[in-house]
Image 1 (cartoon, rainbow, N blue to C red):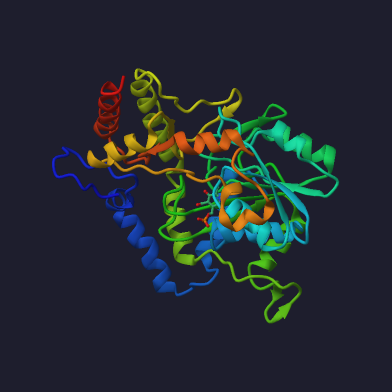
Image 2 (image 1 turned 135 degrees about the horizontal axis):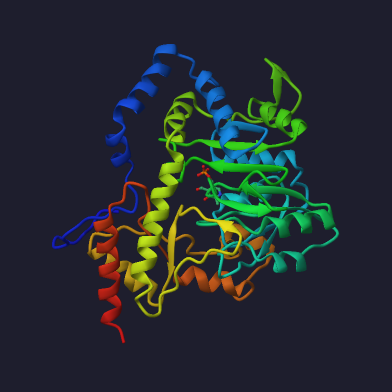
Length: 383
Ligand SMILES: Cc1ncc(COP(=O)(O)O)c(C=O)c1O
């Protein structure tokens, strides 16, 4: 976000992919150049190599590259039968695609309120909303940490629900299941990731991944991403065209080599923000639930006077974002579900208080200090 203010001493963009590109230009240029030289643009060698490397890093049997996180959700929802009136539990506080994939196929999104400490789905609320026609549940691992998956798995077992994990934001987040650390996205029937450029592992365009430990589901995903076909021009299903682009796979392979270091850098910035901002009364900072290993995909604060603070930061040259300003139950396109204001009070309140600060590995310490200084100045002026 560009500043409109001429007097700010620093510009801190909300996100800036060019810093990383400049730092590793030779690697990225070579990776893209190799694809151009080989010419295998569609499901080329880089895609299958990336799939193997991603599966190993995540600890999952199958990893299948697709066009985007949104497309991964549509394929997953279709394959798991989230359609024709089937009810699927999904948080109201999430990105649109977590829910549109259910509605698109005629399934019924059943919204669930959020836990205000973790900012993820409130599992007790999900349980209250289970009915005889509930077919599935979609935990979404937002911002910092996974949804409590032990609870999701137990709920799913007792009601025979299919589970699709929306781990679009969850790259590298971990939690413990039966005393084993498991990565977000790998604990259910199907998990999906987005490699949208801002993500913890981001491509230089649209890209996504689907993961599963189930051979049958893996076969279906591979078929669905190429028009429901496993033999050219023979179609077993009415599938999609959703393939991970070979050039994006080549870029992702370069970034995967240093993904642990990138996560570590995010964690350093997260701690730096928290140390500084904890001294400002009235702010609520990200909290990590007991057995979760977090990844700072987003550094969110919950604040009074959010919109005025955002305006002040903009004037000081600081980028920010609001994830998410309107919960999904209040979106016009879902008005047919009959919800109104007040139905999901936690999500409604958080959507008015939440503010995301700049967070990427290449952020500098003096930039974090600058952001914190400007936030402190804003609240000093407000009794
Ligand atoms: C929670 C969530 N689900 C789904 C998506 C969709 O991913 P994509 O942008 O790759 O389509 C995103 C990404 O923006 C997301 O944050």
